[in-house]
Image 1 (cartoon, rainbow, N blue to C red):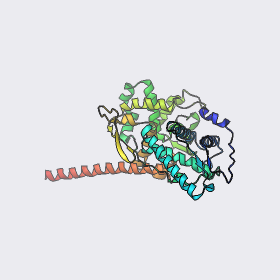
Image 2 (cartoon, rainbow, N blue to C red):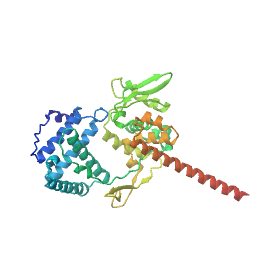
Image 3 (tube, rainbow, N blue to C red):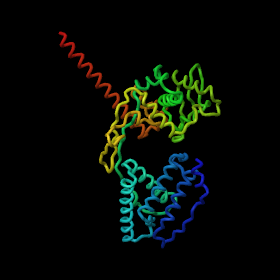
Image 4 (cartoon, rainbow, N blue to C red):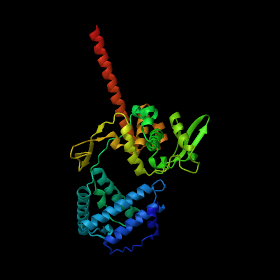
Length: 382
């Protein structure tokens, strides 16, 4: 949060637009973008439901602003804002060509100079469009609808999750506990707990003793407010999660975090190391798309070595594993959503439903195959 604090020192910019104003220069564009970031961070600009925009989203805005600025510098491109309501038809056509040129050069820069894939380019374009809509809808600067024609390809990247059997191994295998260091035991505990309660990593690492409730010989993770959605969650904890809580709760008072402080980046590094302990550490063919064309990304280009499950797991794997396994093992969708904090119409949640159904289908097919093989053996015995 402190890294964004400097933005609060910038005063709201006053722009005098008259009927004669045709366009605004590059300096004004970036000043307005900084104001857009500032207003999002301070709470002046909010989501449609009135909730505050998350710090992570604001950092995304900062990233996009900086990338556009680098693009302008490295490609010697002058970015301008046209006041659409003051343009003649001929000037409007000229502005449309300008924005098409910007789109082509900017996306080429993202693909070729920055090595982005389709989803990353989509991320940069999406936030640029959000900013342009902000200018029109909140600043009442009529910049036109040219940006609404910007598009990019989108790739649905497979969800990386642990199966119930893999998770059970991490929870209950006694030999595993003997073979890993104390540091990795902590990573294991955080990971297993995260794979159980379906919290986002940012919420998981800020848990404290205040979030643990004991009632009628049961332990609950209570009143966890998601930083992203502002939804409160209460989860009944299984025995193994209670054991994890007791290991750390006894060491910390209620004003400290439940788990030892660790950055998300450091956690991800150690998690990949711990991932080597996961059984069936299978190869994963990492495929990404550029302009809709599939490309295989190798862990080692020279030897064409593929990534493994251990390479691909991240802090996000915990939440995805929890949600997918709950659905796969038959928990009703509305209950899973209540635990995970997803809204009823969440597109993100529907992806988990689809993925969980594919897991169920795969297991069902294996069952049918075994039944068929058993039938063949029975006939052969006769």
